[in-house]
Image (cartoon, one colour):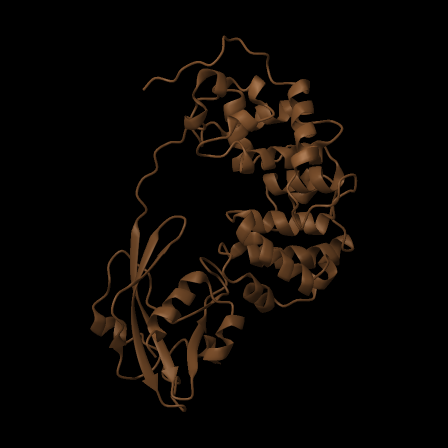
Length: 368
């Protein structure tokens, strides 16, 4: 079905009047979020930084309770710098993309040690800090310091692609979308402009069924005029995620303790706790071979079904084995014994367990 044009082109190009309409809408409809300052007050750079790191690959709804818990525990960068990496990883557990938590911890320490606990004002200086890339640097500089920077996330890309009817597919269109967004950025209220674009994309200019009749930019939107807003931004077709397989071994002591292993700091889920497992690979090793990597000599029982989890670049399927072992079970023969700890079941919630490992534990301990 061909799109139906809704008005005669050309429309007026997006410009100062567009920005004025957007900011007027934002003043009335802005979302109340725990990291935002009241209207007219400069935002706290610590809160902006913490929220932007959490919101990478995470929705606002999921991020809010984590943000509130972090803020209650570590109310400023000086407090966060005193935390251990293990404490930060445990508080982050469940948010995913754990390199963000490691960099958060490194950044807090660096800010205290080298910057006196103060955030640099400019995006160029902010980009020198661990875990802060061009988008996050632009967001902090604009929102917290009023610098004329243009943070472009997925919401902003969508608004700009529709506003200017950019039909080139992502990710190739990203440089052009950033350029166009920068042409609109407010000189007087860059932070509010950035947040207004984010709010518009999150609440009105949504991926599916955008609410064009409620949009303050409808009169300037070229995609809406052409009737193609629902299919923008276009995206290149992604290939299927590869599948990796593995065995996981959950050892439960008779006194109710579960064996956990700390992953190596580098790589996926670095520094997090896990149920010991084989290497995740395209092919499963024979069970007799995998059993030699089990942490405890025991009678291992296969739990029916599998645990499935989707990462950014692959899908994981784990076959889980469970064994009940004596309270004095020995790990001395096992090469990874030094990275292991016995944790009581009631304390598992406090551990830095990623979501996939919480799935493994729940799967292994069901009906027990």
